[in-house]
Length: 84
Image 1 (cartoon, rainbow, N blue to C red):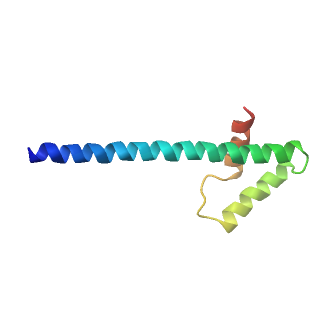
Image 2 (cartoon, rainbow, N blue to C red):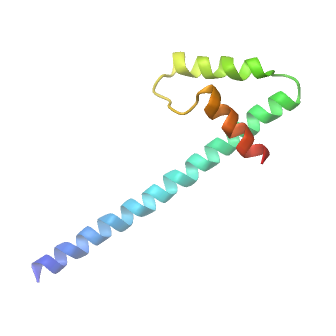
Image 3 (cartoon, one colour):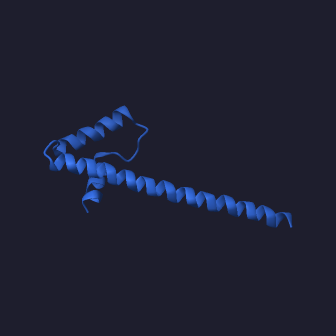
């Protein structure tokens, strides 16, 4: 009987973890969309060139090394995601 109750608690924990993971993933998709939109608009408006995206990637890497995934390649993918 006790093991079943423990199993119920484990099920609650796992369900909550799944919900949290989905929420985090949704927020990351939203972030990537917003970053891509910002970059795309800056490039389209001729305020930024391709080199500026490289400079942004370098800035993030140097000033905020804890932020992962915002390399040159990652930023271009975010831009492409928005434009697609």
